[in-house]
Amino acid sequence: MTDNKPFGGVRALITGGLGFIGSHLARRLLHMGADVTIVDSLIPEYGGNFFNIHDIRDRVSVNITDVRDSHAIEYLVQNKDYVFNLAGQTSHLDSMLDPKTDLDINAGAQLSILEACRKHNRSVKIVFASTRQIYGRPKYLPVDEKHPIHPVDVNGINKLAGEWYHLLYNDVYGIRASALRLTNTYGPGMRVKDARQTFLGVWIRNLIQGKAIQVFGDGLQVRDFNYVDDVVDALLAAAPTTATEGQVFNLGSEQVVSLKWLAEKLVALHGSGKFETIPFPPDRKAIDIGDYYSDFSKIRDAVGWAPKVGLEEGLMRTLEYFSLHGKEYWDT
Ligand SMILES: NC(=O)c1ccc[n+]([C@@H]2O[C@H](COP(=O)([O-])OP(=O)(O)OC[C@H]3O[C@@H](n4cnc5c(N)ncnc54)[C@H](O)[C@@H]3O)[C@@H](O)[C@H]2O)c1
Image (tube, rainbow, N blue to C red; front, side):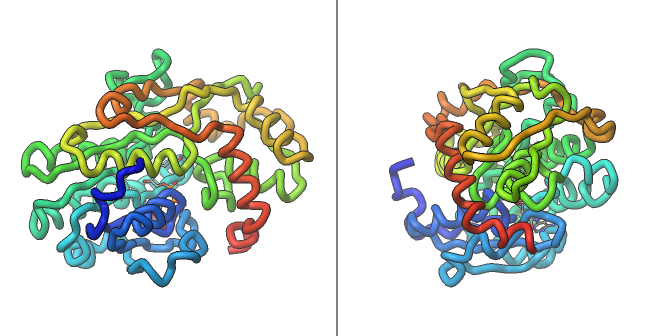
């Protein structure tokens, strides 16, 4: 996105802004001249980390608040031009072990945010970070937005509810909202401390720490990946236009690779390390979606978005970042 004007002087609220994607978005909005407020609960098991904003800390307003606190949210949404709604419980496994917390954050709190907007700020525009997880195991590839919805875990169901509350409030109350269904997103600041959200973060950590990367199954399952800068582009492209209102859009990439290819590539880019294939742990197999990649032509047609950062370049940048700053992530 090259046009900086839509965000010069605007007031933007980012829920989950100390997390991986939210912090990159905060930095970009700030550089475009926006006034940025971050809301994040910093629940230790989740992805929030103050180091993600260490370079912009004194230029953004940070509220350590839980989005389940409807009173705080009612105050925070006031006078905002945009809400980028990224706060979420992101672990699929955790959603199976503690489904109620996932429900409260990914569905209940989303409803509270929308209610706060209905009561206090109907002119706001919201972009919601949804997920490709809601499709479940693909019935055809690439998966477009018309693909049947069949979540394979509690997280997918609750994210779907969160997404649809946004669309409903758009349609019924005119609170302009759109949802992007993100695919695997990676880059500096991604979750590497454990495998709760994504395997790729732990692979990168293991590689840097000299441990073997573990690939579940035969490693032939294919996926698409987006570098975080491209996802930020999509969030920013979706926000100011009427073309996205009341709609959902897949993100994705034309670069579709097997997990084994990805493991080999990481080892090659790092210049050392190894990977091994191991049997799928049963709890992960039960909620695995198999092969997946998206058709993202809808968002390309609506706002001209397409990913720009190739996988090798993005992986290299990510490896470099964690080689330098990894301790800020796995020691916290
Ligand atoms: N990273 C991906 O591959 C991916 C894929 C699909 C969808 N998404 C969605 O994108 C959004 C951002 O993901 P991310 O990768 O940056 O994850 P992340 O965990 O790094 O960021 C989420 C942030 O939300 C905060 N948060 C969680 N619960 C909260 C609560 N109750 N109140 C306030 N803050 C809370 C966390 O502290 C964290 O900083 C999430 O909603 C996620 O579901 C991400």
